[in-house]
Image (tube, rainbow, N blue to C red; front, side):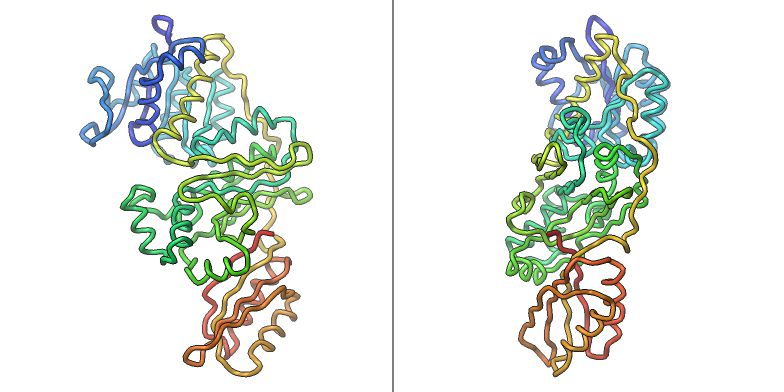
Length: 429
């Protein structure tokens, strides 16, 4: 500390780092009151100070030298808001070894290297906090680590990616196709210029790995999480879902299944009366279920400079309190062993399947025969009127092993009467 204040160095003055800077500067008096100690930004590091920002940073704080910030003996806390693995992981590792507490909203780094970083922080007697890595301003990780720490959590269902939720909301409300809505989201700043991680479910899988580790108390290999994106969802699917009493959301799902965990990210038909069904636009929400806590849902803005910056600032305050009271390094990794993930083929799923078929007698019977041979049970069928001798059929299947459904779809695709199977979307009951 310097002059009785905890000193903070911020690496990366982009969206989140910039939001944090504004909060620490603008709310300094309130932050000192709740933290019990002053918190000052001692250095702000970025590789591009020519990039326009809607806030100003004093020249004395600006630097492009991350190593200089990390090794400054007066700085107590390093905030990493660069994102990705490289060079962020090297910077965070160096900061911990230099005796600095670390705050980071970097979900990819924490999902893939969190175990190592937590152990390293414990070994060096410092803190590493990462509330901003999941759910933006939603205090979900703190809730799992503190308020719900004594409760057994059996199920997580979350909308944890604001970009995809915004796109699906626009498609649902406007009847628009995926591509133009994605372009609009990019133009409005809700989607990255390179949106693959968001729209393919990779971002949500990283967040689910972090949530699952805290909720289920086991180490999670993010590479083992099944993930699918939303690019194949069409207005037709959204319309059929609505007619059947569902909405379509990209969901991150985690469940205890005996000695295994079931972890998956994919679009899903969700009953319209489910609490998550009303989550619109860029908002996120996480729904938890357990025998002691019952059903819990946390809701809020999942991205953005000030919402995520608020979560990061909360972690900075927590670290500052620990520094002021000499109690750093109190939160080591609490996971016990590597989780055994259930293979996707063994997961029990229900599904919506949309097919385009030849409009001729016996088609339903042929498809039903294949489904029956693979032990896939039919819950309901909708057949639309034909156009150009092609009819559209929508099936909803009862819950059963995923591998049976996939085997049935492969066999059905080979039938001469099948023109196309445009959509298979799982159903969450």
